[in-house]
Image 1 (cartoon, one colour):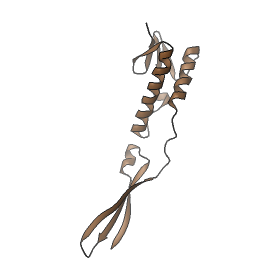
Image 2: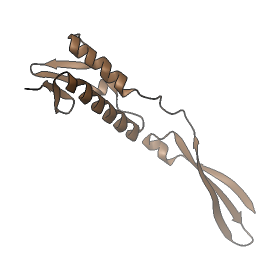
Image 3: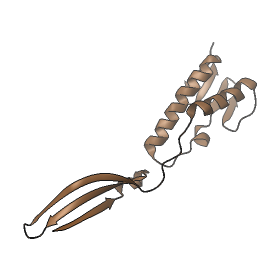
Image 4: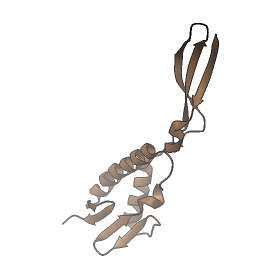
Length: 128
C-alpha cells in the first residue's frame, strides 16, 4: 500500500493563492487507487483587505473641495475616475472585479449625495 499527497497549483495561473491537496492510496496488489482527501493550502499570502468606502470618501472629499487628485481626471461636464490607477490589473481576477464593484457602489453613494450621477464607466456628471 502506497499513500501520498499531491499538491496541485493549477489555479495559480489565474491568480489563486491556494494549492489543492489530493490524498491518494494505491494498492498495487489489488490493482486499485483511490483518493481519500481533498483540501487546500495557502501557498502565498492573501491580498490585504480593501476598504472601498474609505477610498470613495477620500475621492469625494477631493472632488467636493475642488482639490486636484491623481485619480480624478476633470472634464467640461464632470470628471472621470482613473480606476486603473486605484486598482490596477493583476492578481486574482475575481478579487479585482469584486473590489472595483465595491468601489463603484461606494462612489455612486457618496457622489450621489453631492448631486453627481454616473454617465458611463467611471465618468460622473452633475445631475440636471
